[in-house]
Image 1 (cartoon, rainbow over the protein chains, first blue to last red):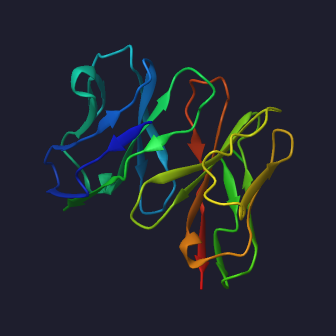
Image 2 (image 1 turned 180 degrees about the horizontal axis):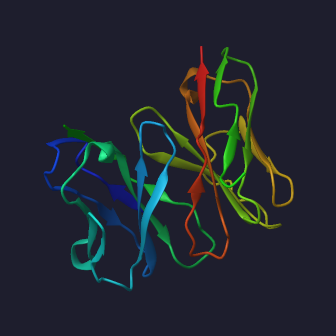
Length: 116
Length: 114
């Protein structure tokens, strides 16, 4: 069975602060993919990143960075110098990379509010 | 269109009625997924179609739920004898189906059962 836990239900920061969203996962699969999606108030999920379990290198994309640590089963997401437009619900998700199952297992999401 | 589209965007129905929700995937995408998102919660997998293979129905919560897909195009999710606990946003996603690709989501259908 797979499980994704996002312990932070809501986070509120002031613009320009850095913020880290936590994600912890459980899986029996030896290979898997981890994802982050953003869901703005409009409701449509926006893909942010996919990470293969083989690749533990951290990744940076502009103000976004991701810290994957297989030893602690965590895949945390940091937004540097947050902006009001970053306000959204962020979901972490997991999927096996082999076998027939392709569906994503999602965490319950973290509501991020960036105040001006 | 360029993205996944869903209709209707909102649906209000009375308890006990049947509803049909439609999803148009991205052209060329062989895989199609339905998820349900209850208020304030994450997404729950419902069903997955991949090409001409038998669909993975393992996430359907009851036999009141069913889905069909015509070839590699439109899919319809049907909920029979709706209950209040069916109220949620139903999201459709599609992917290229190569197994390692991202799922692209539609805007969802917000279903309210009164």
